[in-house]
Image (cartoon, rainbow, N blue to C red; front, side, top):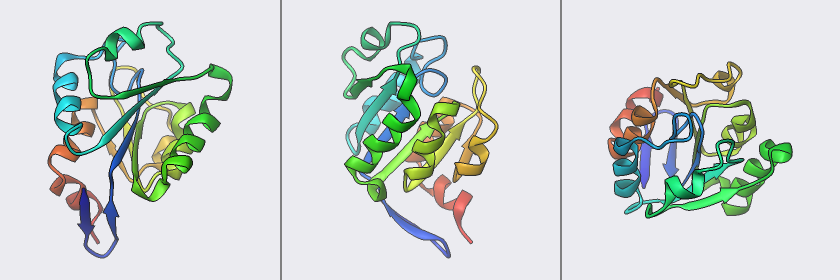
Length: 155
């Protein structure tokens, strides 16, 4: 998806990196509306779901979704997420997260979105995020309605 943001930059995003808990899931459960959005977005983007799987059910929750689930040990989550984006090609990636372990991922991505939903958001993510939204649905909707991204970032 190419997004031209006047007086800012042009984005050419083909991959979304999404944190699991707090970003697309609440207490380890992906709401039905989020699943619908992920299915629609997968027609345009390659979607990675990144998680330390705190609740132990990420695989079940992602079953049948057109996403790539990546789990990792909690001890190196920050670096793991950042390095995965770098290896994929940062300039073509957007990242969404809510936690402290998402900070480096948001900093690395071409477009970064901080999510403030029911599980809260690490306060320092404001510094790394291009946009901040109030719910996981609002975050995903930015890619379904890209003029919202333009409106939030234009000069």
